[in-house]
Image (cartoon, rainbow, N blue to C red):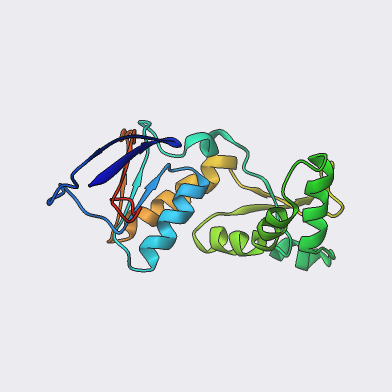
Length: 186
């Protein structure tokens, strides 16, 4: 038997089909920054990957965003000799959120920013060389991609499109996720 889940609620149950039209190891929903990074990472690990987007164009809201981000330990910070720590960024996030965020998750995110910067750079994203200390930040750490969102999404798309085990599909709306008896998405 299978469970069909829409959002956070179960909407039905039925036998799991014996044969599927297609099979992938990983299906990523969304072609914005997070989706493209997840899809590329899975495909580069050798997994057969599909990255899906409901729109006729790729990139989601990332495409129209400036996509500047706070990064602790970027090459730009190192070049300029700016001292910074993930704990400081996490603390800044807690302050500007009025304490509403999860400090532990903020620290996890802060610790991953330099890795994301390297990932994006290695996958074709170019930076304008500026490093800014925007409101709420205790250090100059905000990096700016050339071309904003398009300067991030397009290089990631170009890279993913060259991976032999990665498919990117537009105009594919995902309404339901089907779970098998073990809770695995099938």
